[in-house]
Length: 505
Ligand code: SAH
Image 1 (spheres, helix red, strand yellow):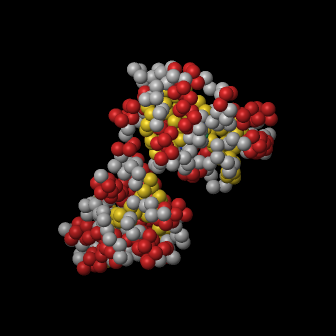
Image 2 (cartoon, rainbow, N blue to C red; image 1 turned 45 degrees about the vertical axis):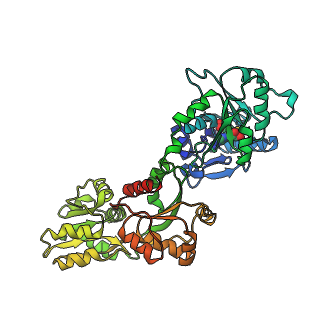
């Protein structure tokens, strides 16, 4: 039996969170993904590792020959019995070749499904603050191709209607012929004062919006060298942008920020910065791996009942500790007799996710905070387990020992650094287009220095604002010759994000 099926999935215009839930479902079960040029390759992150990825290598899909090849490829993969996702920018059926691909699949008897996407005009409208229709201003909207006007006499567009009706007109593929198309609308009776907006790379963090009129937009676009891809929105609704634009008002709009973190942790913080308008370049500087030996941690876990306290100072420590507990065949009940100390809200949440309420939460997120909390208790003759990172500072064990506790601090995980920076990050640094770099622990900055070499790092970060999560990280920055420009009062990612917003306000 052959279960081959092809899903034509609209990827949306650029912001990877604009894909539909159905689209993500399809990507998650794909065995083959055939994709065009995507503004944001993040969407491919939904695709299983083992899936075959085929880049069609063409932008826009205008060449018939290439299109035939793509049709054949989809049919062949479908015949092999594969779940195939054909990922297309925007919506598959709006100025895409989705229709032709479906015809080819139908002729070959391959089942297919079409998953709509946010088309460029709709994405541009939302992210530029230009409603395409408005009860008082425009009661219709027309999507037209701006490209067909090769032969001036034989345009298939009904220019009279486009120009005389007062509805909104959106041109796709209209940058090259911008001047001619605007001219035609004026010739056919639309007022030269009609407002026009060009929206380039709509919904991407680097979206550009250029506003003018039918009479002058072509000159303006030429002046600033505006290139495709862009949609051209023509109509009175464009004037609403002045009141309704919201994206450009975001505090981090247009800022390019490097987030140096362990790869598996960066997501949430990056998303927060992106939601405030920043372009985020993730630059993993830490990889978390198992300790060289589990021996000491295993020993402690097997004797958990002998400990009075377990101190967990980071989300990673919690994860590695509980993973190991599980591997050894135990669960949270093994902690029954111990009290738990957590540092900071994230660590607390992580511990709670294992069904455990910490007995003590250090208000100050540094090791010193933990020491402070314990100094109020009688620690004499208590036994403390402190599963830690290999490079952790020794403040906690040292101070607790001074209070009379017996402290075991086995390594639960190690921080190692990846060998190289992601190419986009390196490229942006070389182009000097980065506004800010964030460091969220000493190892992030130390590892970056190790990856680039200290001198090169200092050179590349010239003119880049340095944001550090707290005094210890800042100290490590300074030791490497960096000046810290941004440091929040409390040592949390939320506070760091807020400090960035204030800095750039
Ligand atoms: N199927 C796509 C359109 C493909 S045709 C969709 O539904 O959006 C290619 C044209 O789409 C480009 O020339 C440009 O006019 C427009 N386009 C696609 N992505 C865009 C983006 N992110 N920003 C602005 N215009 C875009």
